[in-house]
Image 1 (cartoon, rainbow, N blue to C red):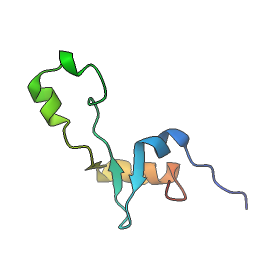
Image 2: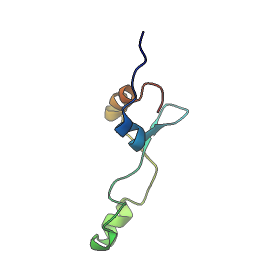
Image 3: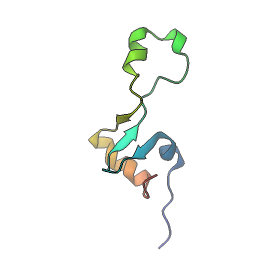
Image 4: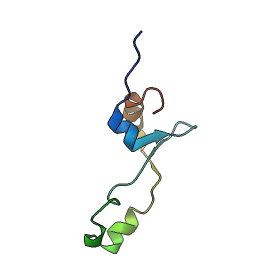
Length: 67
């Protein structure tokens, strides 16, 4: 059987923890921060968030070997 390919975009955005959770970084924290309100910046402050259950299975299919 051939090897499965990892989706490179998913590999850059997500990582799997040892317990099987999908870890991700919150959006809107990279650039253009001077134009954003304090509330917008504070809401994206958590860098390590977890993907919800509905997305988890799809992400795991994109990363068959754990990314």
